[in-house]
Image (cartoon, rainbow, N blue to C red):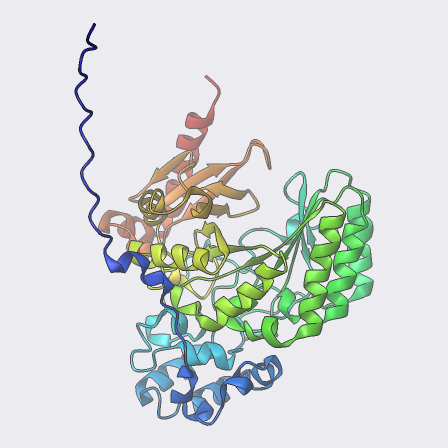
Length: 461
C-alpha cells in the first residue's frame, strides 16, 4: 500500500542580511581621543587611565572649567555657561574623561555637555510642583540617611559626594556643597552615623534588600566598602546588597587602576556568594557616547570576577528621548555586560526643567524598545512617583490628561489609599494646556479634576 505524498510545508522567506547599523553598538570609541583637548594634548594612555590623575584633574570650579574650554568652545557658549552656573542647583565637578567625550564643535547639541554643564539660554522656568526632594526621601527616613519606603527594601545614603555632579540629580537636596539656590542636608561618610543605620536595619527583619548610594559609592575608600559590605552581610535577614554608582560612566579608570578599591568591592561580592547572598553594582549610563573601549575594559574586569552590573537610565530631553539613541544605549550596555534595568521618567527636580520629557514620550519609547532586543536586556520604563509612591510602570497611571500634562498614580503595596501626581513640562503641552497653566486660578482646578478622575478609576466596583 502506497502512503500518500504530503505536500511540503512552504519554506519561510530567506531573511535578508542585517543592516550594519543594527550592530553599530559594537563600535566603541578607542585610541587617544582626549589629546584633542589642549589641556590633555600631552597626556599618554597610561596617565589617562590612572584614577589618581583623573581625580586630581577633575574640575571643581566653574571658572576653571571655563578656562579649560578656552579655544574649544565659542566665547558665546562660555558666557552662556558662566551665567548659568550662578543659579545652578548642583556644584561643578567634571572629570577629564567626561570633558574629553563632549563634541566641543557642537556643545549645545552634545548629550554629555547637556547633562553636566548648564547654559542660561536653554533654561526654562520651574513650575511650582518642582522641589529639591521631589521623591520625599527625607519624609521616609526613620534615621538620617536611610529611606525605608518599600516593605523589604531600604536606601542607605552612605555619603554626599560623587566623582562628578549631574545637573539633574534627584538628590540635589544633599549631594555636593551648598549652592545659591539650595542649602544641602549633610550626609557625610561617617561610621558613627552609619552605626545608627546598621542598628535600624538589624531591628527590621523584613528588610532583605539594601541599596548603598549617596552621593556615590565610587567615592568611598576601600576600607569603607569593606565595612559597609561586611556589616550588612552579617545581618541574617539581609539577602541582597546593591552598590550604586555613576562611576563606570564618568570615571571607569578606577576599576582598572585602583586595585585596592577594586579588590574591596569584588571581595564583598565573593563573601556574599559564599553566604548565598547577592551583591551587585548598579550604575547609570544615559547615552551611548558614555560607553567607550575604556568602559568595556573596566566592565570586563568586573565581569571576570563575577560581579554583575545593572544600569538605570534617566530619560532626558535632547539626550536620549528618541528611539535610535535609546536602542543604541540599551544594546551598547548589553554589549559591555551591563544589563539595562530601569529607564526613569525625569524627576520633578528644580533647575533643570529643559531636561524633562512627557509621560507620553516614555510610553512610546517603551513600546518601540520592547522586542528590539532580548527581554532580559529590555529596561522597564518607570515613574518614580513624586512624594514617595515609589517606582510605578510608566503606563500604569490611573489617569493621564495629555492636555494638562497631569498623570496620577497609585501605589497600593507602598502607600495604599494615596494618589501621586506627575506633571509634564509645560512647554511640551498643547496650547490649551499651556493656557490653563498660565492662569494660576486654574492650577487647583486641574489638580482636582485629575484627582476626581483617578478616584473614580481606582474605586472598587
